[in-house]
Amino acid sequence: MIDGLDFTLREGEYVAIMGESGVGKSTLLNLLAGLDRPDSGRIRFDGVDIGALDDDATTLLRRRSMGFVFQAFHVLPYMTVAQNVSLPLELLGVSGKERQTRVEQMLAAVGIEGYGSRYPRELSGGETQRVAIARALVHRPRLVLADEPTGNLDPRTAQSILALLREAVHASGGAGILITHSQTAAATADRAFVLDGRALQPLPDGRG
Image (cartoon, rainbow, N blue to C red):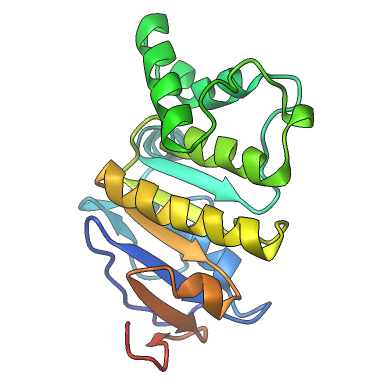
């Protein structure tokens, strides 16, 4: 349970939130995304109280303004890389020519230029996670939420993905939250905290 949490994420900031299993990290992410609603208190996104929105308005807010990167990748196996990355733009009604341009730009930005015609089964784990990052950022969201995005990757690939995610969030001009149990991963963020259910405590190194 999360109780009495008070936290502000600044524009352009990339923050890591650590915590043991069961402490409420996934619950917090669901609350921030509007997938769950708080029993009390408010969650404001660009001045909008997410909890006061109906389901359709919350879905539209997520679609337009948020991007998600998951540990399990969640790319669609029957779609090519380009089709996976293009999906958020299609849902927003972006024209075909602009979609193609933005997809190509994002694939280049995450280091898999020329991979658009491949299918997920033809990719390594690190390449697949790069597709997931490209998909999360292609519609230029205001907020990127990453839930243990390197949990299924080897340490070297994980470090590459973490650096890419941080740089991509900064380049997008939005903000990002990395949910992790790893202090090594948390060290890549601008600020890092430990969630104890009632508060976000800065990591001992004082960077929070």
